[in-house]
Image 1 (cartoon, rainbow, N blue to C red):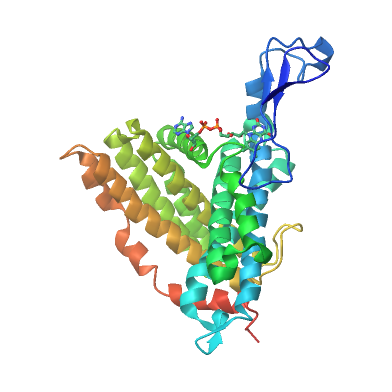
Image 2: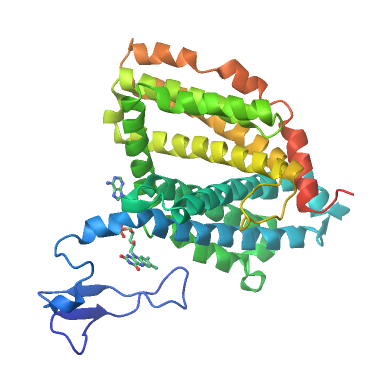
Length: 370
Ligand SMILES: Cc1cc2nc3c(=O)[nH]c(=O)nc-3n(C[C@H](O)[C@H](O)[C@H](O)COP(=O)(O)OP(=O)(O)OC[C@H]3O[C@@H](n4cnc5c(N)ncnc54)[C@H](O)[C@@H]3O)c2cc1C
């Protein structure tokens, strides 16, 4: 039903939407039809620059939505952690079962903390004035993409972690899942984030003739020399692999496929997430993280989480990167041969210790370390 709004001609307001989540928030379509706006009400002072102005603040506004995703994901996961400390199945508590914790709890905690590190890093840069004129828009997009996808996945896992109770209202996780669902949609969908991220970093790759991620890889190797336990070497491998994949895409002109461009956006986000998480874990080693950073985990736990995340990022870039290049390239294209330069053996070797690190993170989450 469309209603006319009193007070200004041409404004029409539709009835509130019957939504999946955020049901206490009133959302309704607004129609503006030849509405006359007094000059004094013009935002920004210059007509016709609304989109440009909106784009200037996306680094900031998308960071806010990233924080919603992070908070929703942790709310659900903390409820699952508590539940699993009380629910006995097959003679022991759920929290003592590795098949439960290492699927439904640990990877989600790790991805949420990686996205928190990215949010904090971007917020700090904006606070220091580095976000003027949309300069942090790609970082804002990465933060939103990582945190809202992680928040949704964590909330979904939290329902599963509660078994049948997870599907009922009193255990709240189904509500959190419904509420957090919007975060991958509004303020730009995840697909638009993938496009935004890929377009910008693709330009960086071209401008630097492939140096953008190679340089990040080199910087991460230097960080590894200073802090050998924070997974910076593995994050560096992810960046080196990404540089190879991007170059293969350039050689084969593969980004003419929108799907390839968007998949690159996903891999880029994971890689940069691993980079920033390794830096956050290194800061924890010297107790030099930002004063506003959350200190829920100690330095050893941050290091273990960062290693787990970097392994996932590197494996994804190596596997998905070569898969999409092979899947999109013309037969016999040099692009397919180029992916042989991905440091696959090193990335595979770097997976050693993954389960031990996951055990360590589980012990931290359940406060089982003496
Ligand atoms: C609860 C709620 C609150 C909201 N609050 C606000 C608000 O305060 N202010 C405001 O301005 N808006 C608001 N919105 C609108 C919201 O930002 C949009 O719904 C969202 O940006 C998606 O746009 P759309 O609905 O037009 O979907 P579409 O753009 O039609 O997207 C549909 C699907 O197609 C994909 N897609 C879109 N374009 C492309 C492309 N070029 N290539 C490939 N895939 C593509 C999308 O990722 C998505 O999966 C709100 C929406 C909801 C549900």
